[in-house]
Image 1 (cartoon, rainbow, N blue to C red):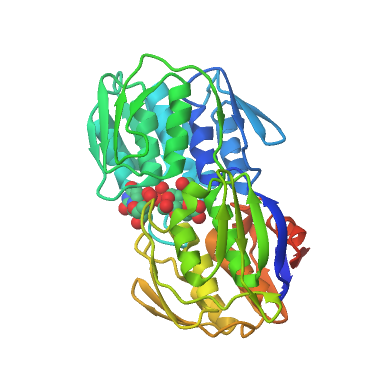
Image 2: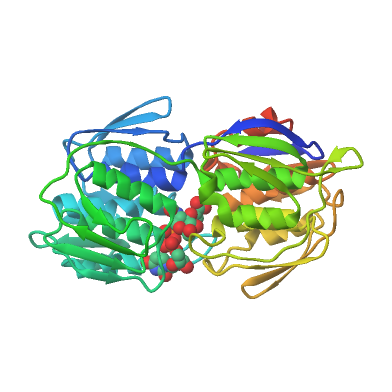
Length: 427
Ligand code: EPU
């Protein structure tokens, strides 16, 4: 199994390009199942998760090819309607094929995802949403079977909590339903907006993009289209936090700062300097004793649906707060078990106590973390351990980095190009 070896203590300088968003690429790839023809998607990151989704499309009968960051999917002749256990267990987002398969053929069978490292993560909102559109769902042998007699029809779907993939799944199921579907308390994440743009380019009629109320007027058919994946705001946010922690000055190109305002506000409070243009962002630390480095002011965060502070940046922000000048309260409200990185950060010397859904992080200051062998438990937890390793003295070995490779394109290479001492090795 591969490991990352990090020699901490080098500040980061230079420019790094941000990849396409994993969490936009997955629903947009699934949406190619909606209409026959050749779909072209640009800026698709080459990640473990996008490869898994392409595998799944292939199992369903689609053909695809990749040329650089462009992926072409031909979904003219679908031959399957089932997402098997072996795939779903490696990537929960496989459930995103439910909506498009239902819309295209009125039937889908998908292995029910189990819990994962960050929480139980049920899909009951997705299934209740489909039921409002005339779909019958049942659970059999660990699989969800969803079927509609005849055409799906419009309906009103209310989400108790604004679920990102739930909104995407119901959107995709409803675009060709008879009549109008209204999704209330819909997720407003930019990735949902990216999917709406693709569906509209395919001929769908959708109102309310960027709001929590979406109206979908069903159309008779859709056609293949060309779309571009938005930049990955979580990857960009991870590098912003890495610079704040390790020191230095880095420009992120090909990103959308407008999607990062919650993090930007918090980093400014920490004492980090941030300059933005429409599609780039420069993060720098103030000079102290001739070193571009800061001891961040400790600030509190609460994770919330967009535009609130993203849960997908909570672990990375915690690694920064470990270096803070006081106490920071980190309140995780989206997932019930997203503090798996705490035990590993403590092994490196962090002072953190968990109280229910809150972590109390008592800053230990700069140059106090100590490199150690640590284990990645999920994608974003892995990124927080890398950030901690960049600031720690000595060597940090991060194992189980397949988690990291699910969602970060060439992270070690990108960090190395900024001056970090980080290598991927075979354990
Ligand atoms: N929820 C339910 N029932 C449902 C759906 C969700 O109870 O049917 C609950 C969840 O358990 C959670 C909350 O609602 O407590 C919100 O979950 P949501 O459905 O929004 O999460 P998701 O769609 O499964 C996506 C991202 C996650 C990201 C969350 C929150 C994708 C493929 N995944 O998951 O990304 O953390 O939204 O923003 O878009 C990651 O990239 O590391 C990652 C975990």
